[in-house]
Length: 243
Image (cartoon, rainbow, N blue to C red; front, side, top):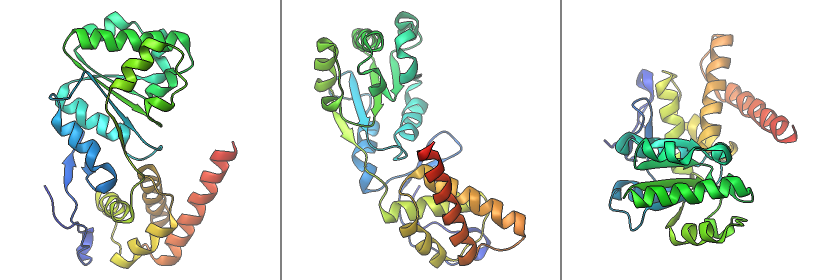
């Protein structure tokens, strides 16, 4: 499905012709230059060049969302990188030949977690399955201590996902607003995009705050209200980073 995206309530059409990808049945994944190569690799499955694929990029760039897209297609088991050290690899491998590990780079530097990821990679490969890993950086930059794991990870394609560009951020904002049935003028989206944090998570948080302010004050979303929402989100992010 593709085409321009319309805010609800008859606001003028916004010319954001980006393909929409069905994800978990609730959200759509918008395809643009920063994520196009990663999407192409997900589309290529199961004809990957090896048993593993690494998607890497900054927080909020859409890695976990693409994992959900892939899991919907492959039926993959999802494992959080934080629990790798205590993972029962045999049980995880038996639940299916397709496995996704979010934040797999958290294993680097933890001997138990590295061994678990190494054995999981081997088990999936021996079963003829697929292993999808996400990380903040490519494996070549992980401080991995286990040489055998390091060699396997470096052999896997590592595909970068960049921060959303203006066009993609605008499309995400419009979709989030439309999902909440919030009516905005097109120039309001143009106002928000260059002033907000550049991530999908920030777009969701900003729209949620706009929704709360609009409901609390029983008023339309105007530029002054949007400016307040941006300021409050900036303060929240600062408090979170300092904490």
